[in-house]
Length: 435
Image (tube, rainbow, N blue to C red; front, side, top):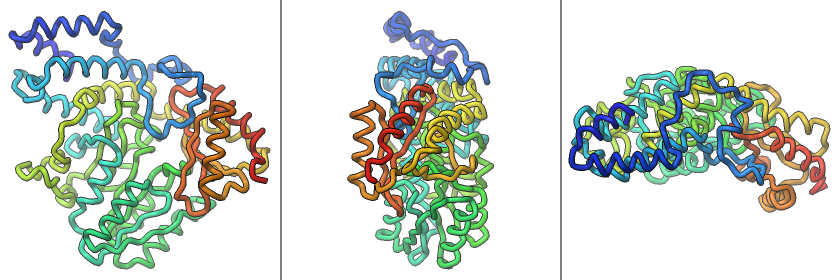
């Protein structure tokens, strides 16, 4: 809901206006007043740590789970939560004049995301997570027939692999898995995808991960999508760690179906994701089973019927505004700089293997490493524990990589240079844990 819509509601809803206005005034008195407008490219990346309220007693380098809201978005979320709590179904049931209602609020969130990724609002739907977004695209893919093959990779997200396996067990698809090569150079990645497509002539659908949640590898999505399309294979792109972390537009991927998390690098409240369906391909993603009366020409009919966190959705436009205030290019550069700082500091340290190539096109802020001899899940867990218990550095171990487990390191927008420096110092001491 926009400020103008909120003002109109407070003026027009005579019965509840005194109570509601009092609630908004109380929120303002608690420091939740309307933040100043965020102008595009107005935030200097070096100032970002000052714009977040975080616990600095721990070096938190595990920002791949979700993105901490900057203060301005957290305030917006608090304000919207108070507003929704006060107005309840008066707002949600779409009875207010001037479009001050759920439909308008949801549309504003979709418009903000469409503006961010560069597509039509009618090609965007808001979900409750990136996993829900991508699962919806995979599980409701209509052209799939029994006997068709679906392809996935070891570096794909667990939920995506599970969705592909569900197509095998419930819809009779042949599930084909392959492992990403190491080193994962552009040439090796494309060769691996070409190989699996050649040996799977009955392939119909393939999952393609833009940025692996396990290693941080950035794949050449556009080339993979084109390769698949040339063989009549559709792709569902997992862009959960790409959107708002890398500087690109949805058209750069060349894909018809893309899903991602809005609560990751867009820094929106938890419980927000989105998917994109190219308008001409909407018919190929089925309407949700719980939406039997929905308009099939409306992309939101692909979402399951559910009561969502309205305040989180209403805060999305402020999060997108914050994204533009940093600027996509400056944001990507800032995150890469933090990543490069710790990686470069360990170039001369033996026994530390960085699990993505040095090619800037193949990495972003998220990067994983292995210590020599770290060849089991238990050993990876022990490294994570050592870094936290001894140095107060939070990382996360990731399994599922064909070669061996890894430790994932993910600086966030608020990360300080001292946080990544602490990791480099710790690994200089601990690099020989298993040799």
